[in-house]
Image (cartoon, rainbow, N blue to C red; front, side):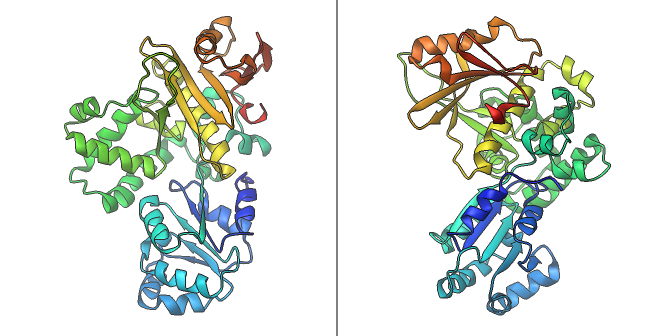
Length: 385
């Protein structure tokens, strides 16, 4: 069992909200987290056809059978249940009563927003973080090996080849989720689309070019990107909005929430292939941005992360807002620190007027030091900065 950082957030929510919703990609550990955090609560999975049929036929009865609340897994499969949940919560709004999980966040968020506004709290759970794996000594010492393996819990619970697991994950995700949400007439075409997204990881998202390369319309590409983003497979990092006297890029950048999935989509089998791959830097950048995202989401915080890039090509990989302080982060896939790593941050400092102390470089090495008042941090120590 790998303890999840998000458990503290769930316990905090349980003190103030009658309904807690845990969303995130399939196989990210939502059910395990709910059961481990609330071990005394009864558990029902609405993926079970018999239980789903009973919940559809008699939703009031099934909720009244558990007066102290319960864990409802994959609740989006019985959408009619949410109105009865509202009635049950209004009668007895005791905190932490119902724990709801769902992989199809689109359907779940819509139903909860409609029926349980003001009565529910949301937690998005992504796969394991580096910090969580390091705490139980499951972290690899090599960043490229770590990226090949990825962070999904089943890979660490069983003796599985990451390549084999991700192959089946891609298939089941397309068959179970995508087809139930959008009208995908050609599954092979959608698979090509996802692979083309992986090939563009870390790049500015050009929907027109992506649609053209996949042989689909711009609107279809936009719809599929939205589904991948809402389901937690990809993450769109938006440009920072403040203008420092330069014309800024206004297009989002495309990242995946798990590097193992990217590697499988690109056909990368081992760390040697990854090290030599032309997209190595972008995959590493995606991995670190996913880690920064997990840190925020596990604490119940909004991401508040952006990138900054002007029309001359000067770019900062991540700009984070912390109150009135802007933290600039550069991400480098090299394992040896060189002063050139700081060039982008120095340009940012000239434009922004921010302090060097609020800047950092995260790289693929292990050292932790300060150079010209800018923090240099190893890839596996971002949580301790």
